[in-house]
Image (tube, rainbow, N blue to C red; front, top):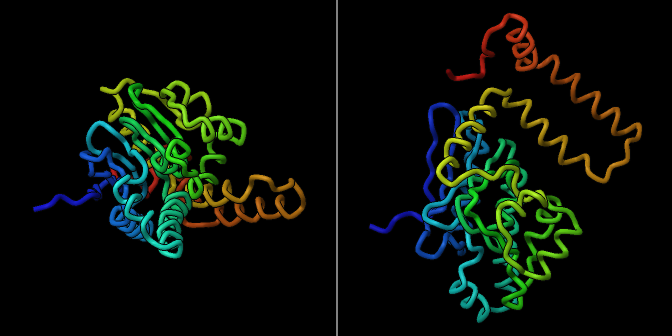
Length: 263
């Protein structure tokens, strides 16, 4: 029986883990994995039992980007078929980037091309000190097109110019310096570091985290004008009177765990 290219695990504490499971091709994605990952992300976003989503990978690599054999087949297809394929990948990136649940990338190994895009779409990225990175498309005469909005948002235009044009490899320390990952951890300590981050996220109000993600997404490049100020005030007013907001404040004052925790 062929193993699924994507393993889904939903734990009782509200943590969901999506594991890329094509280690023989360094977890490169093809049309099947793109469709599976998009579908599962949408399902998890609707699942009220899920509070945090971890994106992980099997084997020694995190994700090598697009499967070269699949890309070779696509090169023989029409431009319209390639357009549809690119739109499917773009939809995956948009879905991951816009998920209402907090997302954590557990980067245990190499991430190239679209694999870097997946990391940029996650809210938090924790990498092994053994991980390597490259925005590698130009080496193949291609461009990092659908991932570019998320790469630029994560590392800034200046760093994106360098690494997307040079396609050079860089290590986890450099990835942290430019903002691609938040933490670099010894390989043997990576799972426990991710567990600690998930535990911290699970202690927070689920609706509050979703609202915070939505607010942050709408802030860049907006002037601090009357509309933005009014929107910010309306958001906190709405949250303060919500069931979750009232429960969180009450739990803090009463020195107890809030009702959304599952311990």
